[in-house]
Picture 1: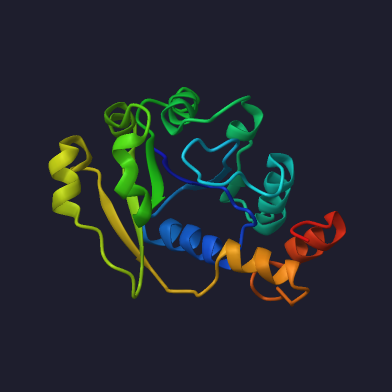
Picture 2: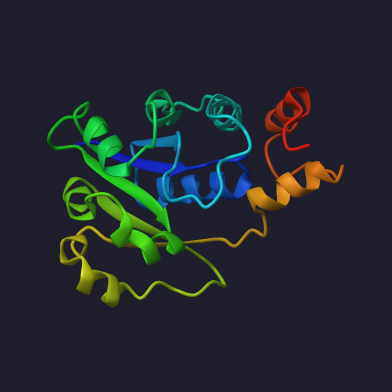
Amino acid sequence: MTRIGVLGGTFDPIHLGHLVVGEEARDRLELDRLVFMPAGSPRLKEHAPLASAVQRLEMVRLAVGDNGVTEVSSQEVDREGSTYTVDTITEFRGQLAESDQIYFMVGMDALEQFDRWKEPDRLLRMCNLVVVNRVGHQRVDVNDFVGRFPQAGPGLTLLTVPRLEISSTDIRNRVRDGRSIKYLTPAPVVDYIGLEGLYR
C-alpha cells in the first residue's frame, strides 16, 4: 500500500507556507508520495487567478524542485473548462493500485462551503480528508462536519501546521507595489515572477 498526499490549490503564486503544509503532511502522515496539484479553472474561486494556469504550474515546479518524494501534477491544468475535485480524484484514483490510500488536503475555510462541492459524498468515499489548521486560527468544528458528512469520519485528519504570515495575496500586492518578495517564496519563483512580469 502506498500513501499519497494530494495538495491542491490555485498557487497564485505558490509560497513557503504551501511548502510547509506539504512537508508537515509528508512527515506526520508518513506519506510515500506528495503531489502538488495546481488548479485549472477553480469553480468556487471568487476571482480568477491573475497568472495563467501554465505559469502557475511552472512556478509550482520551480518551487518543488526534485527531491524524489514530492512531485507536481498538471492534471487539472490540462483539463479544459471548470475543474471539479471529484473528477480529478476519480481520474487520479484510476492511476493507482486498489490498496493505495489518497490523503486529500484542504484548508479549514474550504469546509465552510464543502456542501457546494460537486458530489462531496462520492469524493469522501475515494480519499481520506486532511483538514489543514494553522496555529492561531480557529479550529474546525469536526463534530459538526462529520455530522453533515458521516462518511468523512473514519478517514478525517486534522493537521495543525506552523503559522507563517505569508499569503499569495500579499505577495501579489508586494510585486504590484514594487516591494521585495525575497524569502516569501523560493528564489526560482521570485526570478520567474520578475522575468514573466507577473502581478504588475
